Amino acid sequence: MTMSSNVRRVGTSASRLKAGGLTIAARSRASRTHAGIGRLGPAYTQRNRHSRRMTPVEVILLRVDWNRTAIPLGRLPGRWHTLHLGPEPGYPFGRKGAEILAAWRQIQMSKQEAGLVILDGDVAIDPVDYRAMMQSITSEPDAVHTAPVRLWPRSTRWAGWTWGHRNGEPSQEDVDNPTVFCFCFTYLPRRLLTACHQEGMAKWTFPTCDSRTTDVAAKMKIPVRVVRGASPKHLHY
Image 1 (tube, rainbow, N blue to C red):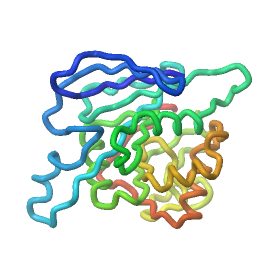
Image 2 (image 1 turned 180 degrees about the vertical axis):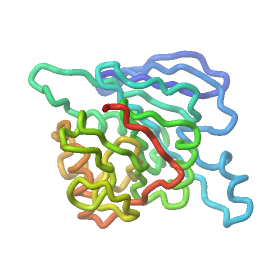
Image 3 (image 1 turned 30 degrees about the vertical axis):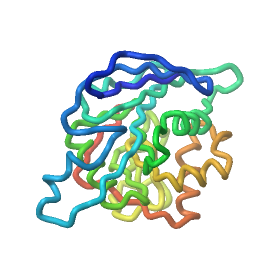
Image 4 (image 1 turned 90 degrees about the vertical axis):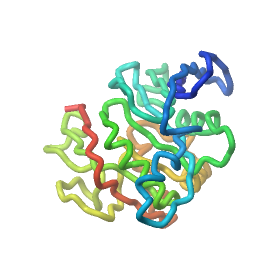
């Protein structure tokens, strides 16, 4: 597993550092609207001018790239880190849980980051989707925030498409308070990541990592918010 980050930071040069078996390659690029790691604040001051002022929070933005097949991010705002995953001998289903935890621990800079935004490699988003997610997180950083994504039979092996957010079994009903969510384009708060670590996330493999995270969130009674205004596309169909 390797990691790279498209670091949108003014006045920095490309650099590399290694820790915990991961490699992060940093590439600088200016951003006028965000500072820090996915910082939520300056970009949303104008949005909130007619409402109560929200306290800025910071999140980590993680793009998961399986075997270097991820859809290019393009010119999305924010500082995105890319987690490169590949097949390993003895782990045909991938050590997704261990690698996400390792990325979360390594990328943190201030230990004040509210949580982790995961964007799977076969999911495409645009700047409107990104802003909708960031605004949703700002309103309730201790909740899970998941964007509505249609999952397709080629990926799920189910008979038809289903929403990634739902209650119970696969469904085409678009619900507002789901009990099940997938990672596709989802924010996990710090307390959920901590609990997942304690529950053994380091041993969770694909494809059960998402569902086990859902189970822990339900056990902790962490609310799951659907990010309305975002419409990412799952392109594995």
